[in-house]
Length: 348
Image (cartoon, rainbow, N blue to C red; front, top):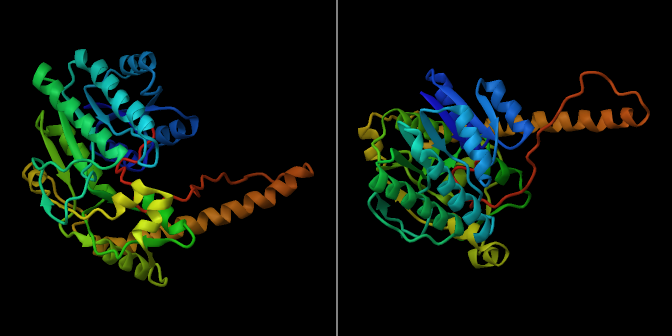
């Protein structure tokens, strides 16, 4: 396969790129920034510069990449406005599908989401519908419809993957642990359907290889937990005090959509994906979270050390005596709500 990837520099996207390369496939990523391009190239992927919102650049990127398959992960996050979600997630997805229609692709993978609306703790499958309650959820619903309609009308080989809440040593969990004074919204008794980022990446690779066109697949692990249980595991793994709570209505005053997503209670079924031959590396978050937290803590320690080196070096720069071998940092220090229900968390 020769796979064109959007969102390859994102939290999930980078793992997908690694998984595809490990399976011997060629990968070409569309990227908007030089830093992301360099990181992707270091993994062994090809890179073309472009943007989903620029149709001319998008056509050029696909022409240069000449893919047999496309993996579409790029999306803006939950905390953006309805307008931003429509511009990138809806209009961008439509532009990509329209551009891909005449290419004769073997498969087009759209990474969507199951994190949309309130399911009252029920277990649901690919055929169940839960109305979306956030801007991101509505934009992912629209993307699903576009893929299904393109298949029905044109035989477009679109396949949909809907991840549950994706965790790993990055993304929302890393930002949450870095946030001072973080507290859980509500009592934490709501169900979370979780999945490790590496298992999402393997699911993406599998669906690109043999997913059925026009079909959707849920990806989650085998053991859902409550939000309170999950963060008890996180606190224990990090050797810290249990996280406190704050009434969800109070947090909604600050940011309603992230809290709505965090307090959503639902469980998903991964049976359909398993029928295709997919298997979990991390079937239970309780067994994986210790390693994830340790990796986050280790990365944070390295970054703080690098930041201290940079601060020291800046003093030398001011007097024209900068030492050689200065370390570069890439610290993602921006605080983010626990509830980011954008499983792709991907950069275009």
